[in-house]
Amino acid sequence: MIGSKIRELRKKNNLTLDELEKRLNAKYPNTVNFNKGKLSKWENNKDEPRLGSVAILADFFGVSVDYFMDKQISNDKSKIQVIYDQLVPTRQENVMNYAENQLHEQENNIISISDDRNRIIAHVEGVVAAGLGSYQEENLHMEVNLIEDEVPDKYDTIAQVVGDSMEPLIRNDDLLFIEVTSQVEINSIGIFQINGKNFVKKLKRDYDGRWYLQSLNNNYEEIHLSENDDIRTIGEVVGVYREN
Image (cartoon, rainbow, N blue to C red):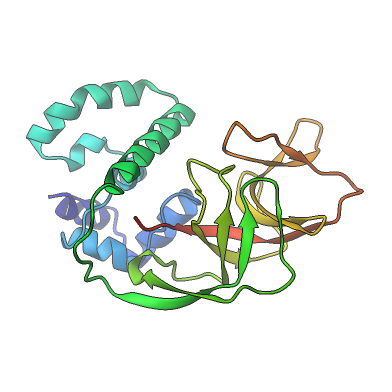
């Protein structure tokens, strides 16, 4: 079972669940929201990680994805693994993003009869644009009912996404968990207010030292920043929430 193998690798590396959570989130930011509760459920086979999460665990522990699979499943997927292993990391990421998207679309066609996972009440305070920007004059304060295991342990506020410029990672209507900060690391996804409009974008810097905001969807152009722009960094995205 996948769970027993995760536990075996964790103990082999002398890591507690808390330590594993922190190291995974530090090494793979803006991917999967790893938390102690989720990891514990995986280890106890109460829930099963998606393929993207398995790939991250495999990379972290230095094993192949096949290590987590049963032999029969492993043989069926060996051709895919051979191709995947030959790709450079950036192309591996593209493959994983595509596979996750295909899985999500497939799961959207399945009606869930029941979900006994614990839920919590939270509030969405704002709207951010994955596109051309959005104005917001006051807090939204919209109540939402979220699956507890999918909520990060640490965040400051929640915003709702409007637009598709950050697909495939972030989609229209997704909820973003945000850590409020005035500084966002290069190549991290953050929330920025440019000339009064709120954006969710990846912060980048070109070879000439000029800052710009990048969309993950190639159909959107980069937003180049200048001294004439009124720029405010709101925070960094620490988690993405989406339900079928």
